Image (cartoon, rainbow, N blue to C red; front, side):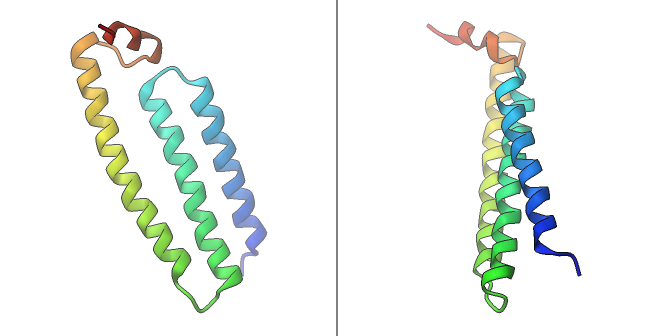
Length: 102
């Protein structure tokens, strides 16, 4: 059986990789992927702490499923926004978003 600490280590690595990618990338798609990494790290934590604190309960798993559903909706909206940005300025680079100002 895999120990809980290993799941927490993987979750921590995913969280820091997502934060690093969010602050260093200039492409909106890469920023979206970084946000998804952060959200997946929290989903792992929900499941791990549910298993650790309440082995018979399902609350952590339901929070994880709810978070995954929210992430899917957020991704769909973000991709729609990126498509709109690309149609207007022919780039999805963050530094070019100033061109959308009035």
